[in-house]
Image (cartoon, rainbow, N blue to C red; front, side, top):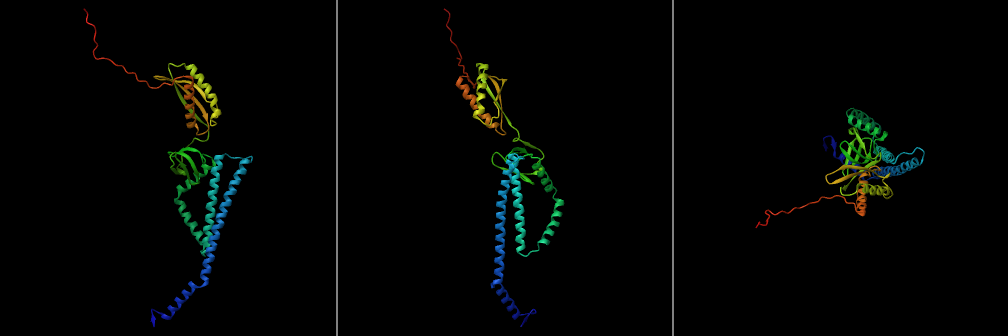
Length: 301
């Protein structure tokens, strides 16, 4: 009996051959070898990444101790960038080796990927701009990991600097991912020392010269208590004559991004010292007058 040119015997033979191939040792041996190769490739990749990260860290430690040391900010940025590059290279190599275990033509695949990448590159101008901008951000050390910056309407601490994007973490925990090509202007608050400005109000009834002397003596003691102050804070003098107080201004040079904490500390110390010597800081007062609507007067006799 024939059905469309194929006999029943041929169908049964093909089915038996398929069953024998699936249940035979050759298929499972090949699959086992492939799985072992893939596991071995992944294991070697994991070891290479682990050892590579340690070598990178050790390299920067040696660099820090050598004559051509770099800043801690730049070290953190370059360390993370080199580690990410190593991970990408190892993962790509492992992916190619896994494809080879499936007997795929890697040469033709890479050639096709190269032609497709060239075609995509002509339309990926923004990507090229981001990468070029990222290179100059790192090369010129415009900002590094840990810096507090303001860029593209975003303000916060730099979490990561890559060739294509940079991650900035805001005060409330949100992470902003900025394409490097869109970063046209950067304000970096972490490069130079900050300045803390504190205004202190003194009541008009107090002796201004005595208050200045007390505050100046206090300021001499503050750098020993607060290491973030790089110099003795300076009392500039009377800044303003308000409606009910005399305002004196204090300026302190502190480490980068420590001006908020330093300002709070100076206010607390000044308040406590003025209380100790009995100098009053003005506070709102409310004076109430009571008047009778009609006043009685003695009738003349």
